[in-house]
Image (cartoon, rainbow, N blue to C red):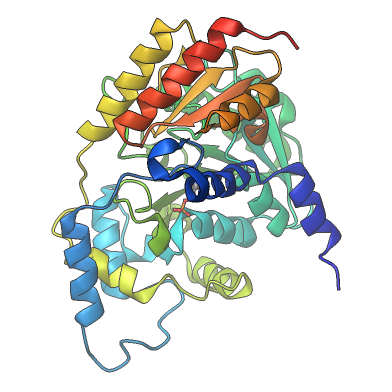
Length: 390
Ligand SMILES: Cc1ncc(COP(=O)(O)O)c(C=O)c1O
C-alpha cells in the first residue's frame, strides 16, 4: 500500500515548517535543548498559571452529558461569552462557531461558502497551510505578491479577481511578514470587492485570519474588517495569545448579515464532513473559567525589539513586525536554502521563505528564550558578513 499522489506531492513541495520542527527535535535529542536555537515553528510562549487553573477546573466539572457529543458549533454558553468578546454590534452567539483552532475555522468557512473549482485569492508571503485548506475544499489558492512594503497590492488583487473568485483569504497580523492590515488597505480591498459584485453579480467572501490579533505592537492597531464589508468572516483562536496551541481551540465569527439557519446547517455539516465534529469540550469549558482573555503583550514586544535591534546592528534587512511573533528577513545569501542548511549545521533553525511563496526571505519566530534569540542572531550576523554568492 502506498500513500496517495496528493500526499506525495505535499511531501515533495512543502511541509517546510514541520520539516524544520522535526530537525529541531533530532538536534535537541543529539545535543541537548540548550545547544539548539529552534526558531522555525510558531510556538507561543508558555501558558500562565491562570490557564492551567482554568483547564483544571474545566476537567473537574461534572454533569450529565459532560463527556458526550454536543451541538457541532459548540456549547451555547461558550458561544455567548465569545460573542461578547468580539465586541461588534449585532454579534451574538448565533455568529459564533467554536472550532478546533483557527485552522478548522478557515476550513469550515471554505467548505461552507466556496464551491469545488472556485478560486480563493491570498497574498504572498502566505501561511503555507492556506493552500492545503483550499485544496481540502477542492478550491484553487491563488496567491498574489504584496508590495515592497508588505502592504496589499490592490492592482494585483484586482487583476486576480475573476468570475471564479469565491473568497479572499488574508491573515492580519501576518505570519510570516508581521504586517498588520491598515484601514486604507482594507477600504481599498472592500471597494474592489463591492465593484466586483456590481460587475459579476457575485459576493466574494472575505476571510480574515486573526490568530495574532492580540499581538499588535503600538503604534499599529487592529482595524475591524466586520465594519467595512458585510460578507466577512473572522477566523480566530486562543492558540498563540494564551499559549495553548496544542489544545486546539478557536472560533469562526460570522458577520451578522451572514447568520441564518442555512449557514448554521452548512457549518455544522462542514464540521462533520471534515472530521472535526466539534471543538474539544474541555478546552471550550476552560475558556469559561478564565476571568479575562486579555494577554500580557510585553514579553513578546521585548523579544521583537531585541531581534530588530540585533538584526539592524548586523546589517540584516528586516521588516519591522507590526504584530505576531515572526521577523521576516531578506536572506543575506542569494541561495536561501544554502543559508538555511548552514544555519542548521550551526544548530540554528529558521524557515526558508519558499515555504511562504517568497524564496528570497527567511522567517524567524521570536517567541523564544532571549538566550536562543541571541545565539541565532550571533550566527546570522557571522554568516551575513560572509555573504556567500550563489
Ligand atoms: C496565520 C495562521 N493561521 C492559522 C494558524 C493555525 O492556528 P490554530 O492553532 O489556531 O489552528 C496559524 C498557526 O501557526 C497561523 O500562523
